[in-house]
Image (tube, rainbow, N blue to C red; front, side, top):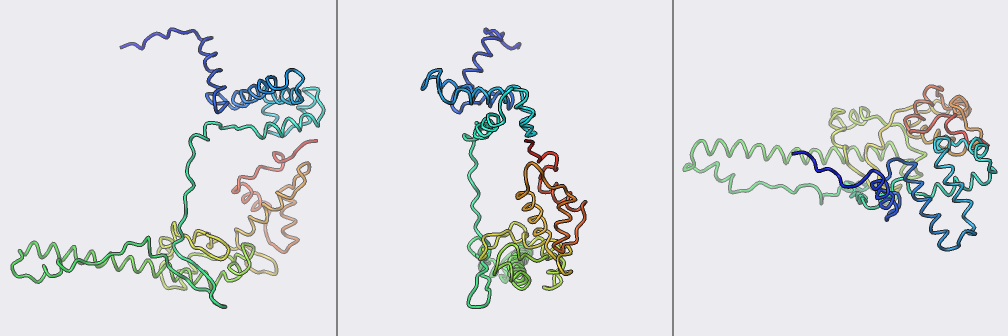
Length: 327
């Protein structure tokens, strides 16, 4: 059956879309980012005119915003503010004010009506200090409390029970016992891993993230006498409440890099240092990967430029050129 022929024109459809875009939240039904942001600016312009008439103090600012979004969105994304000012014939200060205003717009207005509730994490273990020693307390509330029904055990010894029934119950009974043993073994593995974390990460627990030491799963597995895959499965999706906050148990495992004085440094700490250097850099003269490498090497950290570049990309930090803010 053919689709019914629309009884409206393309122009009427465009007008209808414009009406929808001005509904709350302003900017929905936009075809791209430019249209979404422009819809919000046009709405602000209308509000400004309704409140203050044509002499509103924000009239020029909103006009600059519309010009930047409408004609120079790519340049805005690249932070080419000088080029934008030149193209618009506006002072740099006016362009920067427009940029600050645009930052307050909502690029995804529909998301406010599709809110995903934050996932509450209930730690599986608590690592806490008692006197001078750290203790581990297992949160057993989420662990299944299993026990065997004695009625089935009695069934195994009844002569009246059919042989097939006794064989079936015996197999299921053994499986149930093994399941209970596996759960208890997993619990003991988690506790042993936590005690290993206490021994190896005492400085972290006492002083904070900058004291995190490198720690490999295979080393902990060897220490507690199990296969590395056993440790990996035991800590998967498990969280610990510590004096420094709640962390996934996997957080404590990281590779080692050569730190000051030849000591091992956690890969996570090195990434934090790279990120901090970039956060503190001069936006008009951002650090190159080579410069970051030299700074780290001056601190006694043995690292190559290629490694720095890899870690920067892992953290989704743009390159030097992309981070540069032009005057």
